[in-house]
Amino acid sequence: MDDKDLAALYRIRFEQQELPRKNAIWRVICQHYLQRYMSSGDTVVDVACGYGEFINNISAGTKIAIDLNPESAAYLNDDVDFRMLAATEMASQLEGRANVVFTSNFLEHLPDKPSLERLLEQVMLTLKPGGRFLILGPNLRYLPGEYWDFYDHHLGLTHLSLSEILMLKGYEVELCLPRFLPYTTQGVLPTHPFFVRAYLAFPPIWRFMGKQFFIVARKAV
Image (cartoon, rainbow, N blue to C red; front, side, top):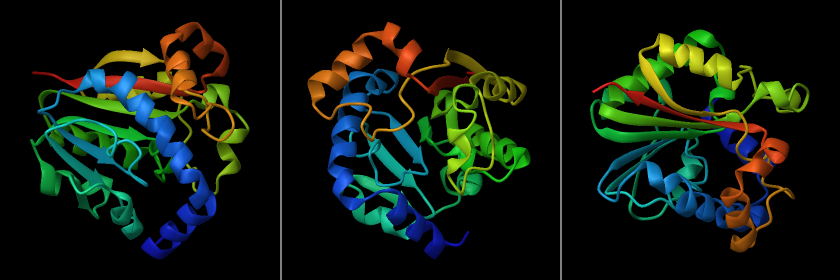
C-alpha cells in the first residue's frame, strides 16, 4: 500500500467529525494513565502516530512522531517533530535517542512476523539503555472475528505471543495487561472526561470491556 492509498484509507476509516471526540478520549488516557511511564524531560517517539492523539496529549521534553501518511503532519501540534519514515527504518535517524517509544494499533498492520522482528530490533536500537517500549493493540484472543474486519490487518497477535517475541529479542517485559481498553473508541468509551477517568480508575471493569492488550517492555540497562 503506497502513501496515497494509506492516506485514503485513513480518511475512509476515521471520519473527520469523530476526531475531536477521539482526541478528547486520548487526552484523558494520556494524562491519567500513560503519562506515568514518562517524565516531562523525556524524548518520546510515537510510531505510526496517525492523527497524533497520543503524541499531542502527552507531556515530554522532545516529541517525535513517525508515520508514512503524509497527511499526519497537519494534525500534529507545533511541538511535535514529524518524520515521514518507515517504522522498520527508524533507527537510521533516531538511534539511541528515545526514553520511550509508543505505538498503538500498529503491529497488526505489519505484513508478517519477520517485519515485526525487524521493528522490535529498530525500537531496541532507538531506545536509550533502560528505555521503555509501550505497546497498545487489539488482542486476537478476545477478537477472533472482528480482528480481520479491516483490510490492512495482517498479523494476528495476543498478549502472550507478543510478550514471547519481545523476550526473544532481549526485552524485559515489565507489564503485560491482556485486557486494557475497549477495541474501539466509537460508542464504547464515553467522551466526557469524568467517565473515561472512571473507567481507567476501575481495573475490574477492564476484564469485561477491555479487548486491547497493553504491554510495557524495557531495554536492559
